[in-house]
Structures are given as structure tokens and as C-alpha cells.
Length: 143
Image (cartoon, rainbow, N blue to C red; front, side, top):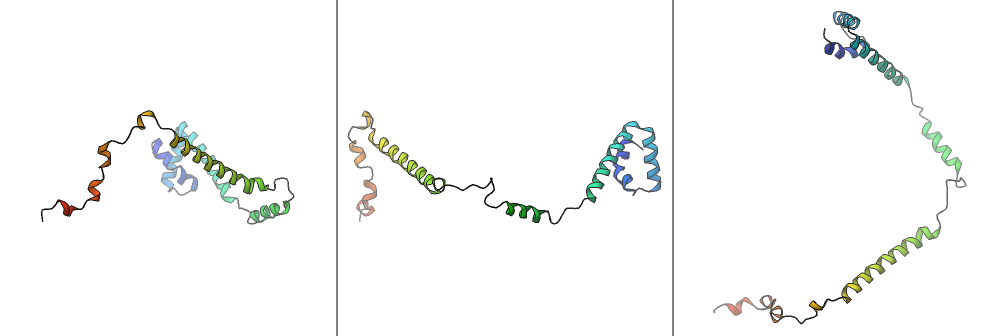
């Protein structure tokens, strides 16, 4: 039996699910191969830990006890604090007003500033740019 095949059989060997001939082959390989024996010992420890974990049972009343403890603390406990009206109502209103004011000031400043290049009159060509939308197609037909 080679090392790879032996290590594949560790779980079945630890569970006792191997046939007699395969079990004997695994045991003889473990006696002759030190690295597989060390791997087997690690798997055996892991198997014991998992078996112990399976034995543990959760307490069904744990959540009930925790909730009762929280309720027993009540509103006078130090972790409870009253939120002042400033934080509840006034603070959000002030933030909204300041944002609206900043937006308004930005728009006003943007409209006031006009560079010298933009202060010229509108070219004549720009005045006729939308005339095609205003005229009827019937004017251009030869009826």
C-alpha cells in the first residue's frame, strides 16, 4: 500500500468501516512509514475533537436567559441614554437647511460670473437655428 492510498483510508479506519484485509494493510503501512504515522496521529486527534464537539448540546434556554437579563437592566442602566431633541429633530433640519443654502449660493455665484468672451451679442446665425422646427413642411412642397 502506498502513502496516498493509506491517507485516503484514515477516516474509514478511524470509523472502523474498513474491511479486515484493508485494515491490516493500513496498519502494516503505518508501522513502516513514519510520515503516514504522524499524519494518522494528527487525524486521530482531529477525529477525537470532532467527536467531543458532537457530544456537546446547546442550552435551549440560553436566549431566554439573555433576553431576561437585558430586560432586567431596564432604562436606568448606564448603557441606556436618552437622545436629546437636538439630535433627533433639530440636527437633521439644520443639515438640510445648510445643504439647501450651499446649493442656492452655488447657483447664484455660477449665474453672476460671466467671462468677457461670453458678453458679446448672439450671432445672427444662432437666431435662425430652430426655424426648421417652426415652419411647416407644406411650405416647401410644390403643390
